[in-house]
Each structure stands twice: as structure tokens, then as C-alpha cells.
Length: 218
Picture: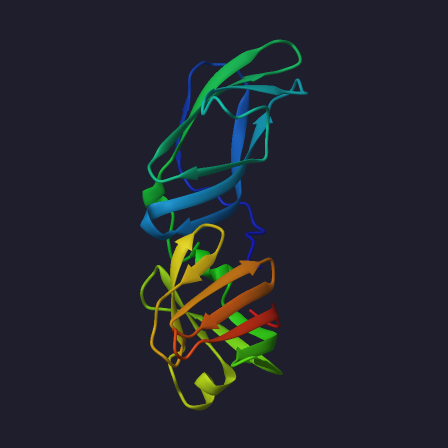
């Protein structure tokens, strides 16, 4: 799985509302950019000053508690509004603005967590019988931001583009009705470094191929 190990400042709009020596740092440990400007951010507020320990009181979003880490979903600019209190009961109120226009959709592309090769066990069921065999799935980015392509070993061998899969939600599920070769309907889900991928044919030629696999590279 792809995870941002470095600490990433994503906005430089910061306002301090009094002259206290208290201060803070904003650190984003993970940013994921989904279609339609839906962004998931995991971050910490790290108070700074001479008289710790510190506590935080949140005004916006008022659902946040203490120093985190926090995970929030945004689709528009968001102002964080909070107060820091030190051990000597000195307080300072701060605002920090997260601007979605400063977040690079390609750098934090949600598909980065899924692309790569997966070693899979495949089960092909048709007409009352099931065939089991190993296969390798390759997940690549489509030129369209809300799509990926899933390619089997034969797709790569014969230079096919694979199955176009469309984004459904932030849990990483995809589905796309496609032609007979790739199935009448199909879906994929990703959990950590594993993939579950199924392809089913239409009535009259109903078959189901289920792939279960583990990613072997990024």
C-alpha cells in the first residue's frame, strides 16, 4: 500500500490571534485524492511552547478532540479553528486553512495504492464445473482519473488493454459493464495489499471467474 512517510505541509495560510508564545505545526501524514475533488487527509496538530503538556480545544471542526491524529474528508477549502492551552493555563487561538487547490491530484492519486502486479489464484466456473489455475493480474492507471485497467496474463501477452474499471467509492471498489470477453459485469476490491476481482458473463453464457491475490510489487 502506498503511505506518505514524510510530513507534508499542504497550506501556508496561518493566523495567530494573540501575542502568546504558544505556536503549533501542522503535519499531514497521509493524503488521498479521490475523483470529484474528494480528499481524505490524516494530520496532526503539534503544539509548541515552553510549558507543556498542552491541550487543544476545537471550534471548527467541533467534532475533533485533543491533538490527534485526525482523519477528515473534504471537498472544499476548510479552516481549522482551535485553541491551545499550556500547563500554566496560557492559551492562544489559531486558525489554519487547508486549500484543496494546493493539493496535487496526481501526486496523491488514490490509484497509487492499487497499481502493480498481483499473484492470484483464479477459479473459473462454467456449466457446473470449476477450473482452478494461477494467474497474474496487473493493475494500471487509465487516462481517465476515475478509472483503472486490470489486465490478466493473456491481456499482456496479446497486447489487450484489459478491463476498464470505474471508481465507485473510497473503499476502493470498482465496476464496469463491459463486453463479452471481459464479462457482462465485473467488480474489484482492494484490502491492504490484496485484490478480490470477479468477472461474470451474461445469461445464456453465464460464467464467473474469481481472482484472489496478493500484490508482488508496486
